[in-house]
Amino acid sequence: MTTQAIVEIPLNKLMASERNVRRTGGQTIEDLAASIQAHGLLHNLVVSKASKDKYQVIAGSRRFAALTKLAKDKAISKTFGVPCRIIDSEASTESSLAENIIRQNMHPADQFAAFRRLVDEGTGVEEVAARFGVTATTVRQRLKLANVAPRFIELYREEKITLEQLMALAITDDHAAQVNAWDSAQHWQREPHALRSALTESKIDAANDRRVRFVGVEAYKDAGGQIERDLFQPEHEGYLTDAALLDRLTAEKLETLANEVRAEGWKWVEVLPTADYSDLSKYGRIYPVAVPETPKLRAEIEALQAEQEKIEEAHQDADEYPEDVDARLSEIEARIDELNAQSRQYSYEQKGLAGAVVSIENIQRGLVRPEDKRKVQAAKSESNDEDKTGDDNGEEDEVQLSAALVEGLTAHRTAALRAVLATRPDVALVAATHSRALRICYPMEMSYDVGSALSLSSEKGGCSLESHAKNIGSCGTSGARLSDCTPVRRRR
Image 1 (cartoon, one colour):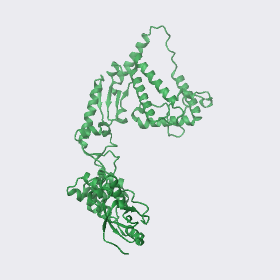
Image 2: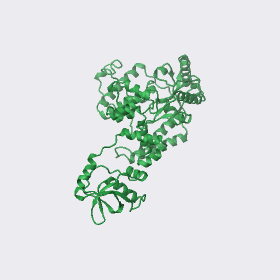
Image 3: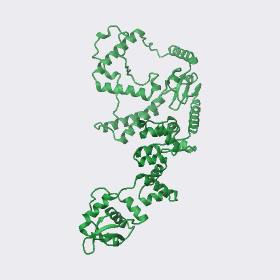
Image 4: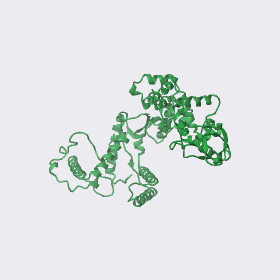
Protein backbone atom coordinates (compact mmCIF):
# COMPACT_ATOMS: atom_id res chain seq x y z
CA MET A 1 0.00 0.00 0.00
CA THR A 2 1.42 3.36 -1.00
CA THR A 3 0.50 6.55 0.86
CA GLN A 4 1.07 10.22 0.39
CA ALA A 5 1.72 12.99 2.84
CA ILE A 6 -1.26 14.60 4.57
CA VAL A 7 -2.71 17.31 2.37
CA GLU A 8 -5.61 19.73 2.73
CA ILE A 9 -8.55 19.04 0.43
CA PRO A 10 -11.52 21.45 0.17
CA LEU A 11 -14.58 20.08 1.95
CA ASN A 12 -16.75 20.37 -1.17
CA LYS A 13 -14.35 18.02 -3.01
CA LEU A 14 -15.02 15.17 -0.55
CA MET A 15 -17.79 12.57 -0.80
CA ALA A 16 -18.97 9.56 1.18
CA SER A 17 -17.62 6.18 0.13
CA GLU A 18 -19.33 2.82 -0.24
CA ARG A 19 -16.05 1.21 0.83
CA ASN A 20 -16.38 2.48 4.41
CA VAL A 21 -17.06 -0.69 6.42
CA ARG A 22 -19.09 1.00 9.22
CA ARG A 23 -22.80 0.63 8.52
CA THR A 24 -24.30 1.12 11.98
CA GLY A 25 -23.58 3.53 14.85
CA GLY A 26 -22.03 6.96 14.65
CA GLN A 27 -25.24 8.69 13.52
CA THR A 28 -25.07 11.26 16.34
CA ILE A 29 -22.75 14.03 15.25
CA GLU A 30 -23.83 17.08 17.28
CA ASP A 31 -21.23 16.50 20.00
CA LEU A 32 -18.46 15.90 17.45
CA ALA A 33 -19.44 19.01 15.48
CA ALA A 34 -19.27 21.08 18.66
CA SER A 35 -15.82 19.62 19.51
CA ILE A 36 -14.47 20.33 16.00
CA GLN A 37 -15.76 23.88 16.16
CA ALA A 38 -14.11 24.41 19.57
CA HIS A 39 -10.87 22.49 19.13
CA GLY A 40 -10.44 22.06 15.39
CA LEU A 41 -10.19 18.76 13.53
CA LEU A 42 -7.74 16.76 15.65
CA HIS A 43 -7.57 13.70 13.36
CA ASN A 44 -7.22 13.70 9.61
CA LEU A 45 -9.47 11.80 7.22
CA VAL A 46 -8.36 8.91 5.02
CA VAL A 47 -9.47 9.25 1.41
CA SER A 48 -8.89 7.75 -2.02
CA LYS A 49 -9.25 9.22 -5.51
CA ALA A 50 -12.80 8.96 -6.85
CA SER A 51 -12.58 11.11 -10.03
CA LYS A 52 -10.51 13.88 -11.47
CA ASP A 53 -11.24 16.35 -8.64
CA LYS A 54 -13.27 14.29 -6.13
CA TYR A 55 -12.13 12.12 -3.23
CA GLN A 56 -14.14 9.51 -1.33
CA VAL A 57 -13.81 9.27 2.47
CA ILE A 58 -12.59 5.81 3.45
CA ALA A 59 -12.05 6.45 7.18
CA GLY A 60 -13.53 9.30 9.21
CA SER A 61 -17.09 9.34 7.84
CA ARG A 62 -18.44 10.70 11.16
CA ARG A 63 -15.90 13.52 11.13
CA PHE A 64 -16.86 14.20 7.51
CA ALA A 65 -20.55 14.33 8.45
CA ALA A 66 -19.78 16.73 11.32
CA LEU A 67 -17.79 19.00 9.00
CA THR A 68 -20.66 18.94 6.51
CA LYS A 69 -23.07 19.97 9.27
CA LEU A 70 -20.81 22.86 10.30
CA ALA A 71 -20.70 24.03 6.69
CA LYS A 72 -24.49 23.79 6.42
CA ASP A 73 -24.76 25.83 9.63
CA LYS A 74 -22.30 28.35 8.11
CA ALA A 75 -19.85 27.76 10.97
CA ILE A 76 -17.15 26.95 8.35
CA SER A 77 -16.98 27.55 4.61
CA LYS A 78 -17.78 24.93 1.97
CA THR A 79 -14.16 25.13 0.84
CA PHE A 80 -12.75 24.54 4.33
CA GLY A 81 -9.40 22.79 3.99
CA VAL A 82 -9.71 19.28 5.48
CA PRO A 83 -6.45 17.47 6.35
CA CYS A 84 -6.52 14.13 4.53
CA ARG A 85 -4.19 11.20 3.90
CA ILE A 86 -4.61 9.78 0.42
CA ILE A 87 -4.33 6.01 -0.07
CA ASP A 88 -4.68 3.69 -3.05
CA SER A 89 -8.30 2.76 -3.77
CA GLU A 90 -7.37 -0.96 -3.76
CA ALA A 91 -6.54 -0.76 -0.02
CA SER A 92 -9.57 1.32 1.01
CA THR A 93 -11.65 -1.52 2.52
CA GLU A 94 -8.72 -2.84 4.55
CA SER A 95 -7.86 0.64 5.85
CA SER A 96 -11.46 1.33 6.88
CA LEU A 97 -11.66 -2.01 8.70
CA ALA A 98 -8.35 -1.40 10.49
CA GLU A 99 -9.43 1.99 11.80
CA ASN A 100 -12.69 0.65 13.26
CA ILE A 101 -11.23 -2.54 14.80
CA ILE A 102 -7.83 -1.54 16.18
CA ARG A 103 -8.92 1.57 18.11
CA GLN A 104 -9.97 1.40 21.79
CA ASN A 105 -12.36 3.82 23.46
CA MET A 106 -11.40 5.85 26.52
CA HIS A 107 -12.65 4.42 29.83
CA PRO A 108 -15.56 6.47 31.26
CA ALA A 109 -13.59 7.07 34.47
CA ASP A 110 -10.94 8.88 32.40
CA GLN A 111 -13.70 11.10 30.98
CA PHE A 112 -14.90 11.97 34.49
CA ALA A 113 -11.40 12.94 35.57
CA ALA A 114 -10.73 14.95 32.39
CA PHE A 115 -13.94 16.98 32.78
CA ARG A 116 -13.07 17.74 36.40
CA ARG A 117 -9.59 18.84 35.39
CA LEU A 118 -11.02 21.26 32.83
CA VAL A 119 -13.37 22.81 35.41
CA ASP A 120 -10.61 22.95 38.03
CA GLU A 121 -8.47 24.84 35.53
CA GLY A 122 -11.12 27.53 35.18
CA THR A 123 -13.37 26.41 32.33
CA GLY A 124 -17.02 26.92 33.21
CA VAL A 125 -19.52 24.08 33.11
CA GLU A 126 -21.57 25.71 30.35
CA GLU A 127 -18.45 26.31 28.26
CA VAL A 128 -17.29 22.71 28.66
CA ALA A 129 -20.75 21.55 27.60
CA ALA A 130 -20.67 23.76 24.50
CA ARG A 131 -17.18 22.65 23.48
CA PHE A 132 -18.06 18.95 23.65
CA GLY A 133 -21.61 19.14 22.38
CA VAL A 134 -23.25 17.81 25.55
CA THR A 135 -25.68 19.32 28.03
CA ALA A 136 -24.61 21.16 31.16
CA THR A 137 -26.40 18.46 33.17
CA THR A 138 -24.20 15.81 31.57
CA VAL A 139 -21.10 17.76 32.59
CA ARG A 140 -22.36 18.11 36.17
CA GLN A 141 -23.09 14.38 36.30
CA ARG A 142 -19.55 13.52 35.20
CA LEU A 143 -18.11 15.97 37.73
CA LYS A 144 -20.23 14.34 40.44
CA LEU A 145 -18.94 10.89 39.49
CA ALA A 146 -15.37 12.16 39.46
CA ASN A 147 -15.85 13.25 43.08
CA VAL A 148 -16.65 9.75 44.35
CA ALA A 149 -14.00 8.30 46.69
CA PRO A 150 -10.90 7.18 44.67
CA ARG A 151 -11.30 3.64 45.99
CA PHE A 152 -14.59 3.24 44.13
CA ILE A 153 -13.24 4.86 40.95
CA GLU A 154 -10.54 2.17 40.88
CA LEU A 155 -13.12 -0.56 41.52
CA TYR A 156 -15.09 0.82 38.58
CA ARG A 157 -12.03 0.68 36.35
CA GLU A 158 -11.53 -2.94 37.41
CA GLU A 159 -15.23 -3.68 36.67
CA LYS A 160 -15.83 -4.66 40.30
CA ILE A 161 -18.53 -2.03 40.72
CA THR A 162 -21.20 -0.94 38.23
CA LEU A 163 -21.89 2.53 36.94
CA GLU A 164 -25.32 2.42 38.64
CA GLN A 165 -23.68 1.71 41.99
CA LEU A 166 -21.21 4.53 41.39
CA MET A 167 -24.09 6.91 40.65
CA ALA A 168 -25.82 5.86 43.88
CA LEU A 169 -22.67 6.58 45.92
CA ALA A 170 -22.35 9.97 44.24
CA ILE A 171 -25.51 11.20 45.98
CA THR A 172 -23.18 12.54 48.68
CA ASP A 173 -19.72 14.11 48.47
CA ASP A 174 -18.76 12.69 51.86
CA HIS A 175 -16.15 10.00 51.10
CA ALA A 176 -16.32 8.60 54.63
CA ALA A 177 -20.09 8.16 54.31
CA GLN A 178 -19.65 6.44 50.95
CA VAL A 179 -17.10 4.01 52.37
CA ASN A 180 -19.25 3.32 55.46
CA ALA A 181 -22.36 2.64 53.38
CA TRP A 182 -20.42 0.20 51.19
CA ASP A 183 -18.45 -1.60 53.91
CA SER A 184 -21.36 -1.95 56.34
CA ALA A 185 -23.56 -3.63 53.73
CA GLN A 186 -23.56 -7.26 52.70
CA HIS A 187 -22.94 -8.01 49.04
CA TRP A 188 -26.64 -8.39 48.35
CA GLN A 189 -27.33 -5.06 50.09
CA ARG A 190 -25.17 -3.11 47.66
CA GLU A 191 -27.84 -2.62 45.06
CA PRO A 192 -28.05 1.04 43.91
CA HIS A 193 -31.38 1.69 45.65
CA ALA A 194 -30.07 0.24 48.94
CA LEU A 195 -26.89 2.35 48.82
CA ARG A 196 -28.92 5.46 48.02
CA SER A 197 -31.27 4.77 50.95
CA ALA A 198 -28.37 4.26 53.35
CA LEU A 199 -26.76 7.55 52.31
CA THR A 200 -29.97 9.59 52.62
CA GLU A 201 -31.47 8.12 55.81
CA SER A 202 -30.58 11.23 57.79
CA LYS A 203 -32.15 13.53 55.18
CA ILE A 204 -35.80 14.30 54.51
CA ASP A 205 -37.30 12.93 51.32
CA ALA A 206 -39.27 15.74 49.71
CA ALA A 207 -41.54 13.30 47.92
CA ASN A 208 -42.63 11.21 50.91
CA ASP A 209 -42.47 13.35 54.06
CA ARG A 210 -45.88 14.70 55.07
CA ARG A 211 -44.31 17.72 56.77
CA VAL A 212 -42.90 18.72 53.39
CA ARG A 213 -46.30 18.31 51.73
CA PHE A 214 -47.88 20.40 54.50
CA VAL A 215 -45.36 23.26 54.48
CA GLY A 216 -44.40 23.15 50.80
CA VAL A 217 -40.93 23.02 49.26
CA GLU A 218 -41.07 26.66 48.14
CA ALA A 219 -41.89 27.90 51.65
CA TYR A 220 -38.96 25.87 53.01
CA LYS A 221 -36.59 27.32 50.39
CA ASP A 222 -37.89 30.87 50.99
CA ALA A 223 -37.00 30.42 54.67
CA GLY A 224 -33.41 29.61 53.73
CA GLY A 225 -33.65 25.83 53.65
CA GLN A 226 -31.33 23.88 51.38
CA ILE A 227 -32.26 20.97 49.11
CA GLU A 228 -29.87 18.36 47.76
CA ARG A 229 -30.89 16.82 44.46
CA ASP A 230 -29.80 13.54 42.94
CA LEU A 231 -28.38 14.40 39.51
CA PHE A 232 -29.03 10.84 38.38
CA GLN A 233 -32.71 10.89 39.37
CA PRO A 234 -33.98 14.07 37.70
CA GLU A 235 -37.62 13.18 38.42
CA HIS A 236 -36.97 13.06 42.19
CA GLU A 237 -37.87 16.18 44.19
CA GLY A 238 -34.71 16.06 46.28
CA TYR A 239 -33.79 15.85 49.97
CA LEU A 240 -34.25 18.56 52.58
CA THR A 241 -31.21 18.98 54.81
CA ASP A 242 -32.53 21.18 57.64
CA ALA A 243 -34.96 19.16 59.79
CA ALA A 244 -35.07 21.81 62.54
CA LEU A 245 -36.19 24.48 60.07
CA LEU A 246 -38.85 22.18 58.63
CA ASP A 247 -40.19 21.41 62.12
CA ARG A 248 -40.34 25.12 62.96
CA LEU A 249 -42.22 25.95 59.75
CA THR A 250 -44.61 23.07 60.43
CA ALA A 251 -45.33 24.30 63.95
CA GLU A 252 -45.86 27.87 62.75
CA LYS A 253 -48.31 26.84 60.04
CA LEU A 254 -50.22 24.58 62.43
CA GLU A 255 -50.52 27.43 64.93
CA THR A 256 -51.75 29.78 62.19
CA LEU A 257 -54.44 27.27 61.22
CA ALA A 258 -55.33 26.75 64.88
CA ASN A 259 -55.88 30.50 65.35
CA GLU A 260 -58.20 30.54 62.35
CA VAL A 261 -60.21 27.67 63.82
CA ARG A 262 -60.28 29.35 67.25
CA ALA A 263 -61.85 32.37 65.57
CA GLU A 264 -64.78 30.16 64.60
CA GLY A 265 -65.86 30.12 68.26
CA TRP A 266 -65.03 26.62 69.46
CA LYS A 267 -64.71 25.93 73.19
CA TRP A 268 -61.18 24.61 72.67
CA VAL A 269 -58.70 24.01 69.85
CA GLU A 270 -55.70 21.70 70.20
CA VAL A 271 -52.71 21.19 67.88
CA LEU A 272 -51.63 17.57 67.38
CA PRO A 273 -49.21 17.43 64.42
CA THR A 274 -49.57 13.67 63.87
CA ALA A 275 -53.05 12.96 65.22
CA ASP A 276 -54.16 9.38 64.55
CA TYR A 277 -56.94 7.07 65.66
CA SER A 278 -55.45 6.50 69.12
CA ASP A 279 -55.34 10.27 69.70
CA LEU A 280 -58.90 10.91 68.50
CA SER A 281 -60.66 7.83 69.87
CA LYS A 282 -60.96 9.37 73.34
CA TYR A 283 -63.23 12.10 72.01
CA GLY A 284 -66.93 11.97 71.32
CA ARG A 285 -68.30 13.73 68.28
CA ILE A 286 -71.15 15.98 67.33
CA TYR A 287 -72.20 16.76 63.77
CA PRO A 288 -73.35 19.95 62.07
CA VAL A 289 -77.07 20.60 61.82
CA ALA A 290 -79.11 21.56 58.78
CA VAL A 291 -79.63 25.26 58.09
CA PRO A 292 -82.08 26.86 55.65
CA GLU A 293 -80.81 26.72 52.08
CA THR A 294 -80.71 30.07 50.32
CA PRO A 295 -82.12 30.43 46.78
CA LYS A 296 -78.70 31.49 45.55
CA LEU A 297 -77.10 28.35 46.94
CA ARG A 298 -79.75 26.08 45.45
CA ALA A 299 -79.46 27.82 42.05
CA GLU A 300 -75.71 27.27 41.89
CA ILE A 301 -76.04 23.59 42.86
CA GLU A 302 -78.70 23.00 40.20
CA ALA A 303 -76.62 24.77 37.54
CA LEU A 304 -73.60 22.60 38.37
CA GLN A 305 -75.69 19.43 38.33
CA ALA A 306 -77.12 20.38 34.93
CA GLU A 307 -73.63 20.95 33.55
CA GLN A 308 -72.50 17.61 34.99
CA GLU A 309 -75.40 15.74 33.34
CA LYS A 310 -74.77 17.48 30.01
CA ILE A 311 -71.09 16.49 30.02
CA GLU A 312 -71.85 12.90 30.96
CA GLU A 313 -74.50 12.58 28.23
CA ALA A 314 -72.08 13.97 25.64
CA HIS A 315 -69.48 11.32 26.53
CA GLN A 316 -71.73 8.40 27.44
CA ASP A 317 -70.29 6.21 24.66
CA ALA A 318 -66.65 6.85 25.57
CA ASP A 319 -64.67 4.29 27.57
CA GLU A 320 -63.13 7.09 29.61
CA TYR A 321 -63.33 10.85 29.76
CA PRO A 322 -60.68 13.07 28.10
CA GLU A 323 -58.28 14.58 30.61
CA ASP A 324 -59.76 18.10 30.47
CA VAL A 325 -63.32 16.78 30.78
CA ASP A 326 -62.41 14.57 33.73
CA ALA A 327 -60.74 17.53 35.41
CA ARG A 328 -63.86 19.68 34.94
CA LEU A 329 -66.12 16.96 36.36
CA SER A 330 -63.85 16.73 39.40
CA GLU A 331 -64.13 20.50 39.86
CA ILE A 332 -67.92 20.30 39.65
CA GLU A 333 -68.11 17.48 42.19
CA ALA A 334 -65.79 19.32 44.59
CA ARG A 335 -67.84 22.51 44.31
CA ILE A 336 -71.15 20.67 44.84
CA ASP A 337 -69.70 19.01 47.95
CA GLU A 338 -68.55 22.40 49.18
CA LEU A 339 -71.98 23.95 48.61
CA ASN A 340 -73.77 21.02 50.24
CA ALA A 341 -71.49 21.40 53.25
CA GLN A 342 -72.72 24.99 53.59
CA SER A 343 -76.24 23.69 54.17
CA ARG A 344 -75.04 21.99 57.37
CA GLN A 345 -73.25 24.04 59.98
CA TYR A 346 -72.30 23.83 63.64
CA SER A 347 -74.54 25.96 65.83
CA TYR A 348 -73.28 28.48 68.37
CA GLU A 349 -74.41 26.19 71.19
CA GLN A 350 -72.54 23.20 69.70
CA LYS A 351 -69.32 25.17 69.40
CA GLY A 352 -69.65 26.12 73.06
CA LEU A 353 -69.55 22.44 74.03
CA ALA A 354 -67.06 20.96 71.56
CA GLY A 355 -63.67 21.68 70.04
CA ALA A 356 -61.29 20.86 67.22
CA VAL A 357 -57.95 19.16 66.65
CA VAL A 358 -55.59 20.65 64.05
CA SER A 359 -53.09 18.24 62.52
CA ILE A 360 -50.85 18.03 59.47
CA GLU A 361 -53.35 15.83 57.65
CA ASN A 362 -56.59 17.67 58.39
CA ILE A 363 -58.76 19.55 60.87
CA GLN A 364 -61.20 17.50 62.97
CA ARG A 365 -64.10 19.65 64.21
CA GLY A 366 -66.95 18.77 66.53
CA LEU A 367 -64.89 16.73 69.01
CA VAL A 368 -66.22 16.35 72.53
CA ARG A 369 -63.93 15.86 75.51
CA PRO A 370 -64.93 13.12 77.99
CA GLU A 371 -65.79 15.66 80.69
CA ASP A 372 -68.20 17.46 78.32
CA LYS A 373 -70.12 14.40 77.07
CA ARG A 374 -72.80 14.72 79.77
CA LYS A 375 -73.34 18.37 78.88
CA VAL A 376 -73.76 17.46 75.21
CA GLN A 377 -76.31 14.76 76.08
CA ALA A 378 -78.21 17.19 78.30
CA ALA A 379 -78.26 19.75 75.51
CA LYS A 380 -79.64 17.15 73.08
CA SER A 381 -82.36 16.12 75.53
CA GLU A 382 -83.35 19.72 76.15
CA SER A 383 -83.48 20.35 72.41
CA ASN A 384 -85.70 17.29 71.86
CA ASP A 385 -88.06 18.42 74.63
CA GLU A 386 -88.34 21.85 73.05
CA ASP A 387 -89.12 20.26 69.68
CA LYS A 388 -91.95 18.21 71.22
CA THR A 389 -93.52 21.07 73.19
CA GLY A 390 -93.03 23.68 70.53
CA ASP A 391 -94.84 21.85 67.71
CA ASP A 392 -97.86 24.07 66.98
CA ASN A 393 -98.65 22.91 63.44
CA GLY A 394 -101.38 20.50 64.55
CA GLU A 395 -99.75 17.44 63.01
CA GLU A 396 -99.61 14.17 64.91
CA ASP A 397 -96.32 13.06 66.43
CA GLU A 398 -94.26 10.69 64.33
CA VAL A 399 -95.03 7.04 65.09
CA GLN A 400 -92.27 5.57 67.23
CA LEU A 401 -91.23 1.97 66.45
CA SER A 402 -89.84 -0.30 69.13
CA ALA A 403 -86.10 -0.99 69.14
CA ALA A 404 -86.73 -4.73 68.62
CA LEU A 405 -88.92 -4.11 65.56
CA VAL A 406 -86.36 -1.70 64.02
CA GLU A 407 -83.62 -4.25 64.61
CA GLY A 408 -85.62 -7.03 62.97
CA LEU A 409 -86.62 -4.94 59.95
CA THR A 410 -83.03 -3.81 59.47
CA ALA A 411 -81.80 -7.41 59.55
CA HIS A 412 -84.36 -8.49 56.93
CA ARG A 413 -83.45 -5.57 54.67
CA THR A 414 -79.76 -6.41 55.02
CA ALA A 415 -80.43 -10.05 54.10
CA ALA A 416 -82.37 -8.96 51.03
CA LEU A 417 -79.62 -6.64 49.89
CA ARG A 418 -77.02 -9.37 50.40
CA ALA A 419 -78.98 -11.73 48.18
CA VAL A 420 -79.38 -9.20 45.38
CA LEU A 421 -75.76 -8.05 45.63
CA ALA A 422 -74.64 -11.66 45.18
CA THR A 423 -76.34 -11.66 41.75
CA ARG A 424 -74.51 -8.48 40.62
CA PRO A 425 -70.75 -9.13 40.86
CA ASP A 426 -70.03 -5.94 38.88
CA VAL A 427 -71.80 -3.78 41.46
CA ALA A 428 -70.35 -5.86 44.31
CA LEU A 429 -66.83 -5.17 43.04
CA VAL A 430 -67.48 -1.42 42.91
CA ALA A 431 -69.03 -1.39 46.38
CA ALA A 432 -66.20 -3.42 47.88
CA THR A 433 -63.53 -1.26 46.20
CA HIS A 434 -65.26 1.91 47.41
CA SER A 435 -65.43 0.64 50.99
CA ARG A 436 -61.77 -0.41 51.10
CA ALA A 437 -60.59 2.80 49.39
CA LEU A 438 -62.36 4.89 52.03
CA ARG A 439 -60.70 2.97 54.84
CA ILE A 440 -57.27 3.36 53.26
CA CYS A 441 -57.57 7.02 52.21
CA TYR A 442 -59.67 8.30 55.12
CA PRO A 443 -58.82 6.11 58.12
CA MET A 444 -59.70 8.70 60.75
CA GLU A 445 -63.08 9.53 59.22
CA MET A 446 -63.92 5.83 58.93
CA SER A 447 -63.26 5.40 62.63
CA TYR A 448 -66.50 7.32 63.16
CA ASP A 449 -68.51 5.07 60.81
CA VAL A 450 -68.68 7.67 58.09
CA GLY A 451 -68.39 6.81 54.39
CA SER A 452 -69.53 3.52 52.90
CA ALA A 453 -72.79 1.70 53.68
CA LEU A 454 -71.00 -1.58 53.02
CA SER A 455 -69.29 -3.33 55.92
CA LEU A 456 -66.52 -5.77 54.99
CA SER A 457 -65.12 -8.43 57.30
CA SER A 458 -62.33 -11.00 56.89
CA GLU A 459 -63.82 -13.24 59.59
CA LYS A 460 -65.13 -16.63 58.53
CA GLY A 461 -68.88 -16.56 58.04
CA GLY A 462 -69.13 -12.77 58.16
CA CYS A 463 -71.78 -11.03 60.27
CA SER A 464 -74.64 -13.33 61.32
CA LEU A 465 -78.19 -11.92 61.14
CA GLU A 466 -79.95 -14.76 62.97
CA SER A 467 -79.42 -13.11 66.35
CA HIS A 468 -81.20 -9.97 65.13
CA ALA A 469 -84.33 -11.51 63.56
CA LYS A 470 -86.06 -14.85 64.05
CA ASN A 471 -86.46 -17.25 61.09
CA ILE A 472 -84.61 -14.87 58.81
CA GLY A 473 -83.05 -17.77 56.90
CA SER A 474 -86.46 -18.94 55.65
CA CYS A 475 -87.56 -15.58 54.30
CA GLY A 476 -87.58 -14.86 50.58
CA THR A 477 -85.37 -12.00 49.47
CA SER A 478 -85.90 -11.82 45.75
CA GLY A 479 -88.00 -8.71 46.01
CA ALA A 480 -85.30 -6.46 47.48
CA ARG A 481 -84.22 -3.45 45.45
CA LEU A 482 -80.49 -2.96 45.15
CA SER A 483 -81.02 0.73 44.37
CA ASP A 484 -82.10 1.22 47.98
CA CYS A 485 -78.48 1.26 49.13
CA THR A 486 -76.19 1.42 46.11
CA PRO A 487 -75.46 4.96 44.89
CA VAL A 488 -75.03 5.61 41.18
CA ARG A 489 -71.42 6.54 40.51
CA ARG A 490 -70.06 7.86 37.27
CA ARG A 491 -67.08 6.20 35.61
CA ARG A 492 -63.64 7.78 36.13
